[in-house]
Image (cartoon, rainbow, N blue to C red; front, side, top):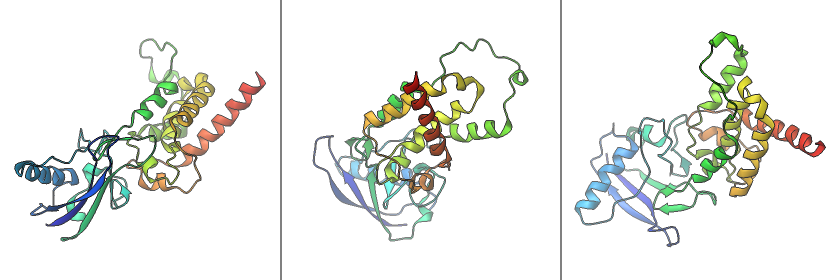
Length: 250
């Protein structure tokens, strides 16, 4: 298969970027999108050029590092997958493909298609943990958890922190990410004692990082590679409102 790639190139955070054109020829239909970029990079290097810089790690849809906007859609047009799970057979021979980094003020570009998503790490550090001593593992049935709560917590915990939700949102909101990270702890008995502190700390850190507000248009849910529901945003709003009222009264 043959493609024309329109790739965002930017040498450093403060450099001016631009779209450059590359020909991707004789690409196997079963190659993943990242494997296609590997092939293109090998040919660029052989020609004495600078390879296209992009993030990757596990290449199994687990780590969330492969954050690319493909033809205007984070991770590409298929739903429920990361970039590394997108295969070239999903495109037509001869297609022109635009490849850009995730765009958000809170995700500054480091080089080419690589962005700094450490803002997510700081949000987690602000409140995404349980600080009480848990001791050794206890009998699983000694602390009953309603099945609906357990299922919802596991679904929220599936978030891999890739940032597609931010890249898809016109406001660059991180509410789906923060909602998922807060919900998977707030729904469980072990996380409830610090639920109020957690909601306040994570939302305030999110605001401090420069993410935008949620306007409930669900782009985030549509592009999430783990299909996390936007209901976690509603839960975060409720938790934050309750915590804010309690803080004001106390």
